[in-house]
Amino acid sequence: MIIGTAKESYRADAALLTTRPQQVWTAILLAVLTTLPFVLNDYWLYLTCLLTINVIAATGLNILTGFTGQVSLGQAAFMAVGAYTVAWLEREAGTPFLLNLVLGGGVSAALGIVVGIPSLRVKGLYLAIATIAASFILHFVFVHWESVTGGNTGINVAPARFFGVELTTYFGLYWVIMPVTVLMVLGAANLFRTRIGRAFIAIRDRDISAEVLGIPLLKYKLMSFAIASFYAGVAGGLWAYFFRVVTPESFPFMASVFLLAAIIVGGMGTIIGGIVGAAFMTLTPELLRFVVEWLGPWVPNAATLLSPVRTIVFGALIIGFLVFEPQGLAEIIQRVRRFFRLWPFKT
Amino acid sequence: MSDFLFFIEVSLAGLGSGALLALTALAFVLIYKATRVVNLAVGEILMLGGYLFFAFAAGAGLSPWLALPLAVVGGGILGAVVERGIIRPMLGEAAISVFMVTVGLGSVLVGFTELIWGADPRSLPAFISTKPLFLGEAYVSRKIAVAFVVAAVVIGVFLMLFRFWRGGVALRATATDQAAAYSCGINVPGVFSIAWIIGCATAAGAGILLGAIGGISPTMGVFGLSALVVVIVGGLDSILGALVGGLALGLIQSWTSTYLGGEYTNVVTFGILIVALMIRPYGLFGTHEIERL
Image (cartoon, rainbow over all chains, first blue to last red; front, side, top):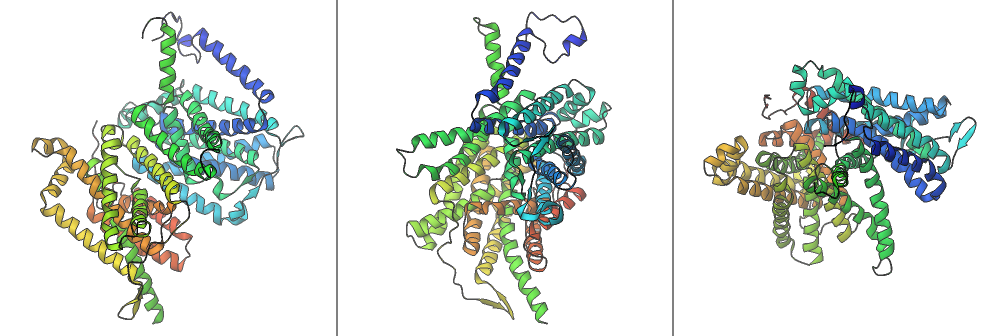
């Protein structure tokens, strides 16, 4: 409970940033985001971009799974659809890259609606398994529709051009990826101030009750799938421009598990959860790399341990968060905020 | 005529792998029936069974006939530990959370396997003779035949246990209604443990058979996904469904990989899954749950 913030209008009550500290912190965050590319070296800039792309995909999945309650293990496949669309457009049509991104999202969203159709008959685990099936079928299409996807060798993507400038460095790409991410996250945050977003939440809490309350399940479930896939498609498109090559193995099934793990670790059903979850899950393997390098002198062939240790930590994080902190990092952040809000008194 | 013979041979091989699928599916069903948990780690436990057998037989130099029960017991112990350590605290959480916990568990198991035994595929020490077997004129690999017989026997034993053994009846009672089972004096948490132990031991056994046929590698847990398709199509809580679904899927996979090419197996498998979900979301033989507000 936030005290000392009397609201005088509904507008103020529904605003995104309700308190002065929130506004200040957001301003600081934006300032940090604009200075980051000037401070970081290439390696960290690379990680930041990758992290930001994951934030988009995780936020999209959070809309579908965290807010609408439709568990999907196919988010990476939709990223692949976006990436392939962008790569194909770049190769065949040569359209401007912002348009390609939007189209990538659009194609992905259209496919998301198709994959979402089973959600009308099945839910929960069964739906999760249906999305697994969809992602394996999509993978097959990527490998075998060679005239469009280039088969196993994939497609090379030309660098993005922005007003005649080729974006080949991480520094250049940052200025595309970061604003898009901020926009998408802002869009997601705003979505839940509208009728659509609240309908999603009602469906998550109890879909039959939601239907009784006059929310057409068909429309809203498919809409949620479309929005989530749109996010995945845009993330995939950025991914294509970032790595400049798209192959069927770029988005393995484990990437879907990774994204679902990210929102579980971050906190399902909170916007900040998608952000910190994706950041946490992207950075942890890198931190492990530093730990392994640091252990190098003492442990024989430490480098070969890296991949299995990453796998173990990945699984252990999922288990640990679900067992001990089911609300995720977002809940921890809340707790810290609560502590400082009332400090020096106990909460 | 030889075409027909070939078809029979392909079908027999399919039935063999189908029996393994059915056995793995049985592990899914057993655990789901008792605890309402879809355990995606079954595939990884299956892999671990193969590796345990490898460790006992090749590493420790035990006779395969001693290593076999040891590996199965090892799977059972793992099941007990997982149930008490991870699944019990998750009781009452959303089904999807528990599902994700088992996904995480699978990842942990794969990691440890790679850490201990390395990522390269290995072959198990031969304990089934490689002499070919002929049914009439049709050739069957002896390993596959043995796998089929063992799977059939194990499944038969399970069916008998569910029918006549006290614990089996307790398990069915728990599956039908937990509260009622409690009030009849059934130790429901005990049933959970038993189901996990038996389920994981079964999976480990299936892993040994599978490893004997195709070798072991940290990625063989993918077999669990095929078994998952079997249980979803057959019905998550139906042993009959696991049986029929397993054999059918084994046949279909064998036919597709022979007549269409190996890369089509996944598509056909998951295509069947989607069609089955659209027509009968609760599986061919599963219980149709009615939702109430």
